[in-house]
Every structure is written in structure tokens, then in C-alpha cells.
Amino acid sequence: MRESHFNSLRFVRCGSADAAAVDFNSQGNGPGTNEISVDGLDIIAPGGVGLILHSNGGLSGPGSMRFVGLHVDGQGGGTATLVEVGPTTLGVNAISILSGRCLLNPPAGFAAIHFTAVDLPHSPFGIRLQGASAARLQTARESSSMRDAVCLSI
Image 1 (tube, rainbow, N blue to C red):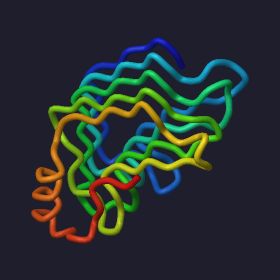
Image 2: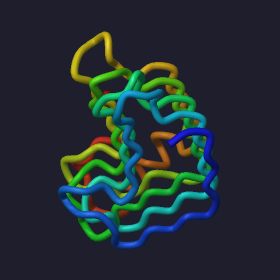
Image 3: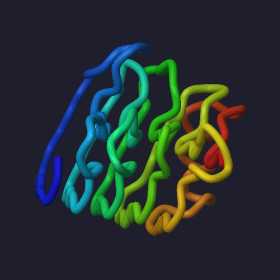
Image 4: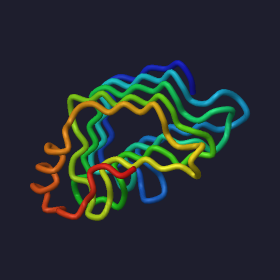
């Protein structure tokens, strides 16, 4: 998928341990998923990962993606990280999460957002995060009684 715009999407109790609620995946022999703009994405109580950006092939990994107003709430326990960037066979780059909202209630033992790669040359780069501070995430996490969750894992 390339050069696309999504606005005001809401997913409640979607996904499973094997399938993310929202999945952007670059595949095939052409250019990777890029130039995607998502404004107002709400993912509430995903069954597994809420949002994943990754690549299983293509000429490049996902890139030039912009999320504004991203809100992922793992309420109800959950079984995975709220937002996963990677792993990829090709690098993930130029991802912006510009959020006036937050990533809330990561399940115990999981991160609110996790960056991963198959190796150092394919590490995510050019990532920009803006929005809820770690203190807001900490407060949200404490109020949900999931005290051992990690806010950011790199």
C-alpha cells in the first residue's frame, strides 16, 4: 500500500494472539509500504498486538508513515505489546507517531511500544515519537494495577 490516507478509525476488541488489530506489512517485489497518513486511530482492548508495522519482503520496509491521534488501550489484560515496530527483513524508517493521545494499559510484562529488528543493519530508524510522556504512561499503568509493564522497549 502506498500514498494513502485514513481518518477516524476505531477498532474495539479486534485481533488475536496471532493477528494484530491493525497490520501494515510490506511484501512482494515492489516498493515498500510508504507515504501513509493515519489521523485518529483508536484501538481498544486488542486481542494481541494493537498496531504492527513490519516487512516480509519487498524492495524496502515500511516508511514515511505518519500517525496523528494514535490511541491504543490494552484494557482487559491483553496478551502482547500495544505497538510493535519490526521485526523486518528490511529496515523500517521515517515513522512518526505524533499523538495528542497515549498508549495506555499495556499488559503486564509487555511494552506499550516495542522496536525490534532481525539485525543491526535492518534496525528501525528515523522514528519520531511525540505525545504522551513516560510520566503519563506511568500514571496510566499504575492506575490499571499492571505495575510490571514496560513503557518503551528498544
